[in-house]
Image (cartoon, rainbow, N blue to C red):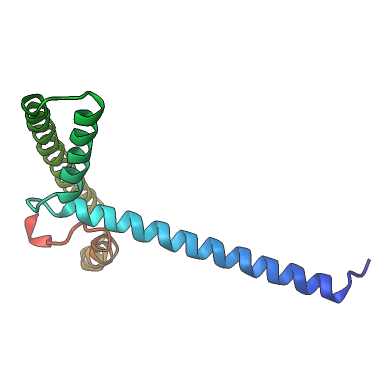
Amino acid sequence: MNLPRPLLKSFAILMIVFALGAIIGARVTVHRVKHTIQQARQIGEPHAAIEKAFLRLEKQFTEQLDLNPIESEEVREELMLTAQNLVQIRNQTIMEVDKEIRAALERIGNQLPEDKRPLLREIAEERLSRWGLMTSPSQE
């Protein structure tokens, strides 16, 4: 069965558009994840996004619960304390992830011949630095 040439062209164009959409979607997703991980890696930096989110929450509580200024300030203090605790938890988690990756690479390296270990480290640093991991190999 021969399909008409215009139908084949339309199908080919549709497939190209679909493929490009998938590629662009994947790239955007990777970029967003990478950005999120790099933001999380900035230990000790101001975490404005978390603070802004909690300030919006405080504003919402104040408006919807009709809080007076004293109650609103108490809510704000609790939310800021919670935000600080969450930043601390996130920082600890990132450090643990980095530590586990380094330990895994050490175990893998111990199973490799001595001459292949530097290449393993180079490959790992190249791949993981994109995600904000293993950015300072001297911390081992």
